[in-house]
Amino acid sequence: MSHLDDFFDEQSEIIGRFGWAVVHVLPTDDDPAETVPFAYTVGLTGYGFPELTVAGLPPETGHVLLNEVAGRVRDEGLLLGHGQRIRGLINGQEVRIVAGEADETLFPGAALMRYGDDRVTLLQIAWPDPADRFPWQSGYDAGAFPQPTIGALRRRASRRCTAFRGVPGGRARRAHRHRAARASHPSGEGGGN
Image (tube, rainbow, N blue to C red; front, side, top):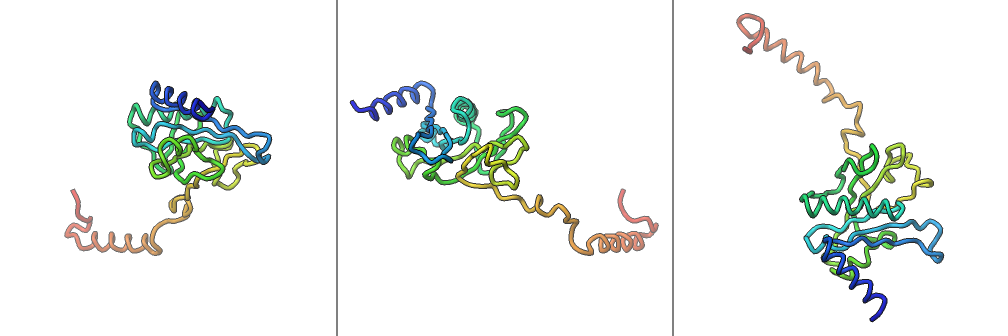
């Protein structure tokens, strides 16, 4: 029996017992200096859910996050989607769910070997830096908190347009309509109850 066979047999036992397994991928001496550790689940695909990944955290922390979210998905029916916020996982901060494609940086090899490319989908649990910024946001401290992502969240228009106050001239038109309605009411005070 090969080392790979042993790995998959042990993983199958863990999946059978808990519903999923967590695989850690740690940088080796042969990897580029910027390589960061990551972890991912294997087993959620068997329930029809995306596999989860987290990057840039110590193995123990990543393991706890993945187990907590995977448990909520499988046991509580939590449905995750791109951009979703989850509170209560990291002290006073929320994480965000990012959908995307596996790449050479975050590659869930064991999940892909077990279930095949056509069945495995991937969601990333992205975590903020101490200033509550995410990797796709301006000012994120990537030097101190490297975290490759499989995707990015776009800012919503409502957040970009903080100075938006309505249609130009809208307030004046509403005031004119209000004055006209009051003037047309027999008592001069407008309708209403």
